Length: 616
Image 1 (spheres, rainbow, N blue to C red):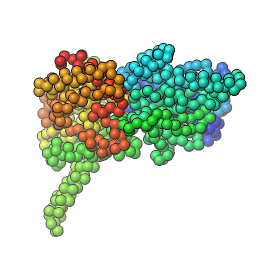
Image 2: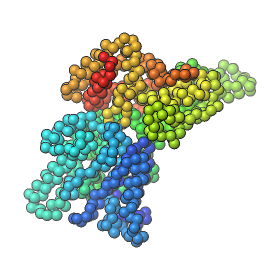
Image 3: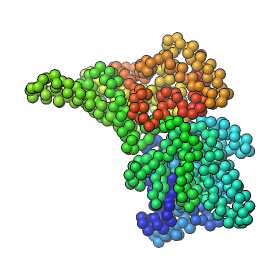
Image 4: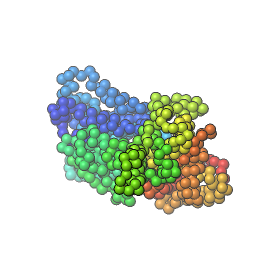
């Protein structure tokens, strides 16, 4: 969100264009375009518009080129202007679409499986009263959509779709209507009439009231961002701090984004001038541009998402970069054990591109380990070592190569079935000659292993062509065992390779009673209030060590005909918390969901899995 605090004429005079705010929004969106987004949208509110003139604008588009498309659509409104008109801020704000003071943009990364332009943010709710118009976007998933749906239908509303975005838009819109009506009655009682009522409502409206009454029952991870037609803007973070948000303010602009480095880059400001939005806290900006922080919901136990740090967020953030390096460094002992302490005959590499920073941390950890060995070996030589002895010790290096190269031109979605699998096998290329066949081990680090599909279809097979004695695949995150229900796209329960491995071990060892008992316990909780529900999917993993599950994963993922021994090494949950101490949300790995709705949904997923499968 970009909220200009000066008239458009100010930006025209200082920066040479009244489009300064629009240009900053474009830059913010492109700098946050670091994943496979499938759509984008923007909203704009014009604060100075006469009755009969449009004051709220929106553009949305689908596809990987959506950002370019929506901004091209906006620029198309300006292409026939004369140079004088284009540089006339007064003309722009009275005449041109998207020449406003408040901008809001969103990149859609689907977490629900629902697609199409109708699901691209921002959403828009229209009304003849400016203050009742609402545009919203957010990074979120709600786990209790059924409860919220029940509440608003009981109040007489009729949402057009059973989707959390639409339902929350209607819920907030309803509370906004009530707030405006409360103020209307207040103004009438004071004797105000006509446009005086409208102006008084727009000056007095308090989005904190709307946010409190709307969000008190929300169960989920979220950052909600919105603007009203009358010029109020806000952003609200969930009480557990699951999803991130950062804001910056100076005398020209207020900016909010879900990632800190994009604000640093777009505005060229120091990191310590950017603030994190607190748990349950909202940034609220009035029509007049006054900003305040408001505690909307009581802060709950901090459960900031660790997966944001491992993979999802932009790695150029100063803290995230340091944490990802630490995640790699934490793995040194486990990797040493996997290669039988034979560092001399081991080559280190990474799976492009998101694991690169963890790879640097792993290398740094091994450099430190090797330096300790060198010190000990020099000490053993006594006080007068000769040149050759010292040279032999000091010349030992950690060997690293860029072994895997991602071929970004390949698009496997264009093919079906077996032909798709054949294409998937070639998504990665290898650097031939980068290790000594049948002599060297190959250690290759990835940021996470969720489904394991790419490992099985592409990576293990193509790495085996190099002839390594052993392939050690390292995950900088722990075993991903449980789905996320708070806004990050994760596999369903039956697609997790860790879950498949645990089920496979139970079946192989004749322990189907464990599955049956977990199913019965889950079934017995159906219909209970979500606060009483316990996650019984944990019972599936309890009989086994992490190492046993990793070994079974290797069996399931290793294609036939692989000559090298394959080993999987995972980060420990303790190592994760050591590297990311301020982001303790680890439900993907531990099953300890931060909200009751997570337990409810994971049990439902398990029940659905059992009833669709033929295990019992």
